[in-house]
Image (cartoon, rainbow, N blue to C red):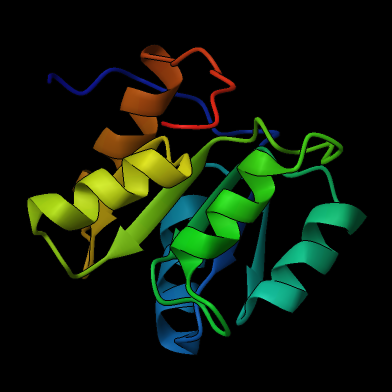
Length: 143
C-alpha cells in the first residue's frame, strides 16, 4: 500500500497497554502525526473510564491488557448493544504474529492488528488502512 496522507488533527486516541514505555512511545508517534489528544490507560478498568469520559476516535489496545486481555476487552465493547462506543475503530497490538492470533483479534471485533514493537511507518500504514478502507459494522452472534 502506498502511503496515503491522513490527517490526525482533531482526533483523539486511547492507548491501552500495561507497558508505560509503549504507551509513551505510541503517544509520541501519534502526536508526531498530528493527533490532538492521546490518552493512556494501563488496564481495562482505566480504559473504560477514559472511553466514558472523553470522545475517543480510535482505541489501540494490547492483546494482553490486564486483567482479562485486550481481546476479551474488545469483545465486551463490541457485544454490548448498549455501549455508546461499540463501533469505535480498534487496533489490537501484539507481538504474536500467528494466524490464529490474527483470526482471534478479527473474531472479537478488532479492525486491525499491529505487531509490536511497531515503527512509526507501520503504525501510519495501519491507521491509513483503517481510515481509507472502513469496514461495515456487522452484528452477528457467531462471527
